[in-house]
Amino acid sequence: MRNNYLLVVPLLLLMVSGCMEMDGFLFNTKKLDHYSLPGNTIPDSLVEPMSVMSGGNRIYGYWVRSGGGRPGLTMLYCHGNKHNIDNYWDRVMYLHRLGVNVLIFDYRGFGMSEGTSSEEGLYADGEAALDYLTRTKGVLADSLILYGYSLGNVVSIHLAAEKITPLTLIAESPFASANSLTQSSSGLDLPPRWLTDGTFDNAAAIAGVHAPLLLMQGEDDDFVRYRDNGLVVFRNANEPKRLVPVPGAVHTDVPEKMGVENYLALLNEWIATRR
View 1 (cartoon, rainbow, N blue to C red):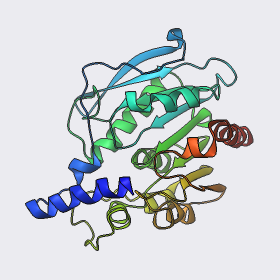
View 2 (cartoon, rainbow, N blue to C red):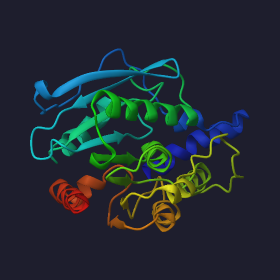
View 3 (cartoon, one colour):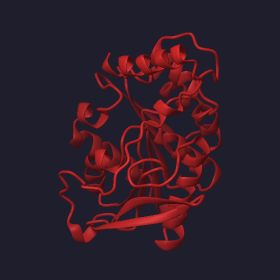
View 4 (cartoon, helix red, strand yellow):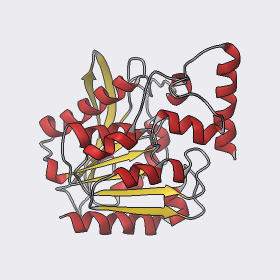
């Protein structure tokens, strides 16, 4: 119940203070003046810092070249609401083992990226990262894998619905909408849009995606309840699609509960069937 508690406390404080904004929690940012990439095992020669402009803000990230295997495929990884690239570098190291190129970036207000976070800012930053891949790196749609984790699904689903039809879309622990997130995570009967002006409506946006979807979520996710969120997003998605509920997993440990080797085998198999 740790994640549930962490969400309820900020929500109660917001109600007490009279503040009608959830965004300060949803965008749980941490500013940095440099990245350390803790525990990095990827050769330095494959790791390239990058930055792009998005709405007047400089957005920072890393382009990680394939170490072999699938150098013609690229994954755009859109991380969750907490922290920054450093905190998701373990995921980059997992995904790099698939043999693909990986791009990870921080949204505005996160890590070294400039600006203030917002729903529209997420979309713009995702589009800027996509533009970097297509224009600077020459990545084509049929060689692009979009991967969203938690809040990052807002970005990846938007890109797949509005900007490009990728090789595949991978969704890990998505929430259905901002309202569904607050209701299911807090256990509070809150009116729609009471705490945020944003909609973050993945359940509606997924209907516009026509790429194959792989969706994974922990059955014991106590931050974004599976039955009210991931399952709703999946049901609204077009075929072809595959749903992988993960027994015993909560919001943050899907790969670890599956077993990292099993997690990578699933992704390997899924990607192989798309080519």
